[in-house]
Length: 139
Image 1: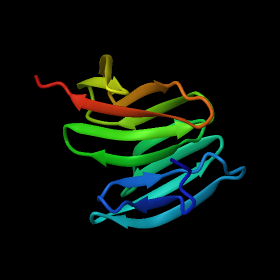
Image 2: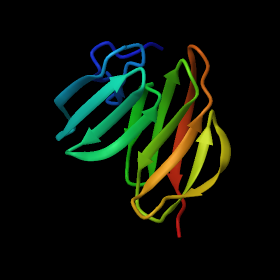
Image 3: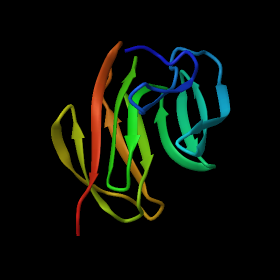
Image 4: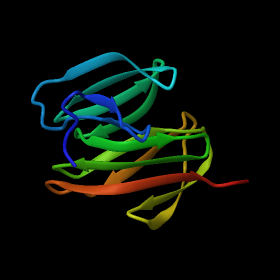
């Protein structure tokens, strides 16, 4: 794995990859079209933020690189890498419960807040990466 030099790209298998935590200055790319939606990425060593059609999707502090990001109504999955531990925030459905898996181990069930935010701690060390899956718990 490596940072995404072009900031955001569609992979051959249809997944989305984005982010470059090695940049020293904030860098943006707007208007990236993916599956009929417009994406905006802001990334550098302090933060990585992804928006879809003007709405929040993903944010990490400090910055990270995200590989093979896939999102559906019931599930989000991606591999995240960085050189420091990071706090990852996803926007999902408000006040819903989700099961969170890190490297295929269930770390518990979490409930989003009124705004639909779910915060995950990503324990990363230099060149380390983790695989994250977030699945909606059926009511």
